[in-house]
Image (cartoon, one colour):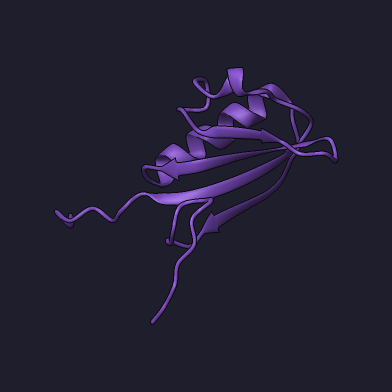
Amino acid sequence: MNPERPEQQRYEIRVQGRLDQRWSAWFDGLDLTSDGDGTTTIHGPVVDQAALHGVLQKLRDTGLSVISVVRVPAGPARGTTSRSS
């Protein structure tokens, strides 16, 4: 077993249907964004693969269809920009 743990990965999970921010706590504090096309994007850091599978199981329990699961590369937080000299 490797004593070093990788940093949390950020994910964006897109589902068909609308969930408002009140569901955030149920999805382990991830942020929810309702998109204009009738979908919801659930996004934020996920501790490990087991936690990701837990979120996906919760989605299964809601009956919403998962459209995509994307790991977001590490980088500046949303709303910030990065400059190189």
